[in-house]
View (cartoon, rainbow, N blue to C red):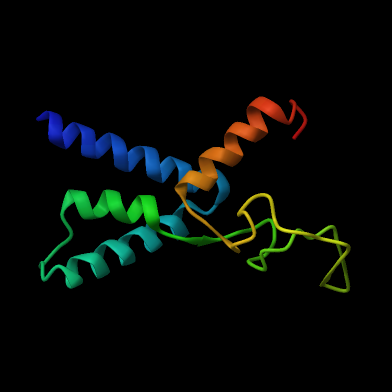
Length: 119
């Protein structure tokens, strides 16, 4: 296996693992990556996505934040299904309402290294 293919495979694997850290439904992440890769291929006038496009799609695909339910605001509680509380910007997605692979890795690092063993 050439070094270029190996590096692309490792980059895709790294980005996909970052996505699945915050999205327990790996299937949703795979579908979103495939849709974005196909869209990038269409824009580049290609018949099928190249390995580089798969990596770019895995790194840049945006999935809804489960912590704030895509509102971008930290939810401290719910009352009859309606978010309540003082809130503030969501710390999981930085107030954007969506997360990318880098957010998943940042959150995993925080959860396992800084927040303590009971998070």
